[in-house]
Amino acid sequence: MNLLFVASECTPFVKTGGLADVIGAVPKSLAATGTQVRVLIPCYPALAAVAAGGKSVMEFDDLFGGPARIIAAQADGLEMLLLEAPHLYDRPGSIYLGPDGRDWHDNDLRFAALSFAGAQIGIGCLGDWVPDVINAHDWQAGLVPAYLRQHDGLTPPVVMTIHNIAFQGVFDATRLSALRLNADMFTPEGVEYYGKISFLKAGLALASKITTVSPTYAAELLTPEFGMGLDGLLRARQADLHGILNGIDLDVWNPETDAAIVSTYSARALKGKAKNKAEIEARFGLTSGTGPLFCVVSRMTSQKGLDLLLECLPDLVGQGAKLALLGSGDPDLERAYIDASNSYSGSVGTIIGYDEDLSHLMQAGCDAILIPSRFEPCGLTQLYGLRYGTLPVVARTGGLADTVIDANEAARLADCATGFQFAPVTAHGLAHAISRCCNLYQNPKAWTATMRRAMRHPVGWDLSAAAYLDVYRSAQER
Ligand SMILES: Nc1ncnc2c1ncn2[C@@H]1O[C@H](COP(=O)(O)OP(=O)(O)O[C@H]2O[C@H](CO)[C@@H](O)[C@H](O)[C@H]2O)[C@@H](O)[C@H]1O
Image 1 (cartoon, rainbow, N blue to C red):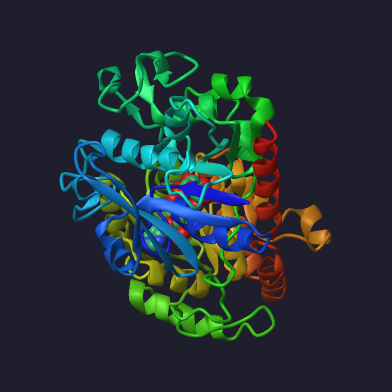
Image 2: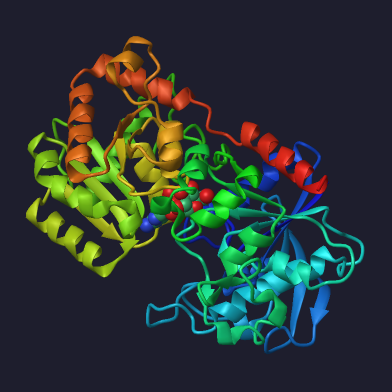
C-alpha cells in the first residue's frame, strides 16, 4: 500500500510536541508490513539541508502567493516530501508563532497550502507515485479532504487523525476564497464551523475514517467536556472513529543505547541510572534527598495541569522528594516555577526551554515523572518513563489511563503495577498520588520490582501499526 502522511512536524527534523514523534516513528513500523509511507511536511529552514540532498518532483507557479515545489528526499530512514514555499515557510523561529509570540498572521494560508499540496499528490500529480490512502494529521492537514472533494476525478480516501482536539484551525469565513475553497463548501457538512471556517472540522466531516491516539480519548471526545465543540460531529461519526494507542520509537528511546544520557542501563542492570540521577541533580541545582526525584518534561499550558502541581510543591518537598522541571509555554507558569525554584532552592529546579537531549537525560536520571494533565489524547512522556524505569504518576484521563497500571493493592498483589494514576484531576488528587509514590519509594525492593516491570511493559508501535493498517484498508473499501 502507498500511504501519504500530511503533517506539520516530524522528528528528528522539526518538533514542538508529540505529533512530531508520532510522524517520525509510524512510517518505520508500517514499512515492516510492506506499506510505503511518504511524509509531506513544509520545508522549514530546519529542513534546508535535507532538501539540498533531494530532488524536485513537482512545481507550483503560485501556491497561495508565491512559487513552490515539492522536493523528495530520504533522511533518517524516512521518505520525505518537502513542500518548499519560501513565502510561507522560510522564516526564523517557531514554526507556528511569530516573534511576538502570536500565531503567524497567515497560518491559514501556510497550512491550506500544505493540505492543497497533499491533495494534489492524492490526485496523482507526482506522476509515478500515487497514494492509496492519505493520513492527514491534526488541523494543519484538515483541508486535504476538502480540496479532494473539489476535484472531479478519482481521489484516494482520507483518514483524519486527531492528536489534540484543542487545536482546531479556526479562521474567519471571509477567508474562504483566499483559501481556494468553493462557496458550496461553506456548509455544516463541509468547512463551516459556527459561522467560521475550521480546518479540523472540515477534516472530521469529510474524511472517510477518523482516528485518535488512544481508546479512552476516543470515548472522551464524544462528550461535551472533552469534545470542545466537535463532540456532536464526532458522535454522528462514531462508527468511523477509532482510538489507536500511540507507541514510541524503541530505537530512539532506549536506555541501553541512548547517546544523550550519561550512563546506559537496562532492566536487568539498573546501576547506570544512578549516574544519570547525579547529573540531573547537578544540572538542576538539587541536593540528594530521602524521597524520589520527580521530573516534568512538558509544554507549559493549562492542558498539562502544571498549576495543580504548583499547589502540591510544599507537600512534595516536605516528604523529602525533589522536582526537576523542563518546559516552556505560559509565561505566568514559567515565572511561578522559577519562583518555586528560588523558594525551594535545592529541592525544586527549573529549566525553561526546549532541549531534546536533556529530556532523554531526565527520563534516564529521575525516579518518577509527573503528568497531571486535565486532558491527554495519548501522552508520550509516560511511555518514555515506562521504558526508562521512571515511574509515571498520571492523571486518569485519555491515553494516560490506557497506558499506566496503577499501583493499587490489587495490582500490587497481582504484580502488575507500573505507576500511579489519580482522579479526579485536582491538586488534592495529585498530592495523594505523589504521597503514594513517595511511600513506595521507601520500600526499595517493591520499587525496583515496579521499575523493572515498567521497563518491560510493551510500548512499541507493533500492535498499533497493525491497527492503523486495518483502518487504512477499511477506508479503501468505502
Ligand atoms: N521542554 C521540552 N524539551 C524537550 N522535549 C520536550 C519539552 N516539552 C515537551 N517535550 C517533548 O515533546 C513531546 C510531548 O509529547 P506529548 O505526547 O506528551 O504531548 P503533546 O501535547 O505535545 O502532544 C499531542 O500529540 C501527541 C501525539 O499524538 C499525544 O500523545 C498528546 O496526548 C497530544 O497532546 C515529548 O516527546 C516530550 O518529551
